[in-house]
Length: 511
Image 1 (cartoon, rainbow, N blue to C red):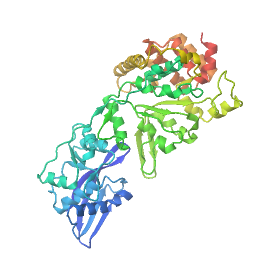
Image 2 (cartoon, one colour):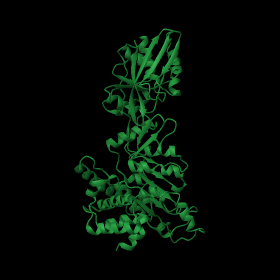
Image 3 (cartoon, rainbow, N blue to C red):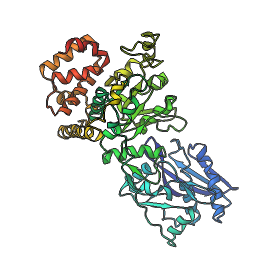
Image 4 (tube, rainbow, N blue to C red):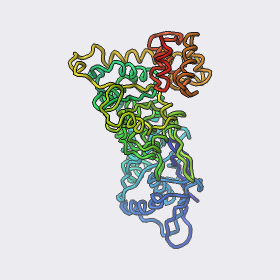
């Protein structure tokens, strides 16, 4: 009779039920693992064998077959060690046959029988709870798994501790969730002198969740302002916290079960590959755009990123998810992010309107900025020219308003959006940057002068259909910051100023 233990296979942030079956059959000693496992799964038999020896247990001199069902689903990772070992113990009678009923298990074994931490404890605990099971996991993963709520968690330091627990010799206490952190202190916006137009754009982007691009010479404060964006954003909601933490759990980024309410801020180097940005690799791990889920993805020196890597962000920015396609599986990761980018106007960094210091202008600027594709640029709602900081700006006293004052206005605007979404019912997006279709038309109803200006600017400036939608979203956010119910001409005019493609048309039309 086969002994059975439940475990999980990870597909993105989803955990799929796997049945581990172990049976002893006649024949010479052999330990065989079947069920489409990868190299780490195949090596489990050596770790299990050594861990048993470390406990003073000898495997029976029979043919041991461990089957991971369903057999056609790929199994990846070392977390199958513990369920295989428990199933073998149950088949040997070391653990009472019915002890493992009602439990799922995951964990890696060391050669001396200790249970080592693995990635994915939180998604596994959530999945186990959904199946009506508890979760057996490494002791180090217990505080993380305990965040799953009502799911029973059994966190063990070693195999011998589990044996003693199931035999009633020494019961293990359930772990407590790890600490909840508020995040690191964010630099204050008051540190930035001058650049009032860029600060205004930063506040609008924070209020509606819009994508933002700063264009300016080195030293103008582009990165400085982007790094202060997290201070303007509200903390994660409970649902967002769970979604974000599950992605971070899959990447092994949750230390000692510590979760944080601060929104993620990811800033990859411009040498990052397409797989690093959007996910992939041998085990289809989450990329930077997924690790920034519900937060900010900051791309400094935007044109220096590879063209293929940048264009791979186009679909996640539109749909809010990444699909990593492999020959044997399609893995989905959430990727609802706010993109903030910064770039110099040209390769040498000194070009730009009115500067004239670039000897190859305007060719240098057009070549450099041409590295960013039009479709990607079309997905960036605010495109802001950041002029150099003058000595007069540096001599000014600190601004009267800083992060706290701007964050209060952002919170009020977001509260208006949340209230509208609750009244709008199912399908209503909480943030303006995610509004679409009839819902966008409902919340961003324009008066006649505003609609006329947007139509004229679209014809004069060449707005695409996506540009029209994103301009309308942006105008709605500007109106929210003002507390206005209706989108008026002044709101549309300011929104169009931030669309560089339509800016020339706006200057001719707006009065």
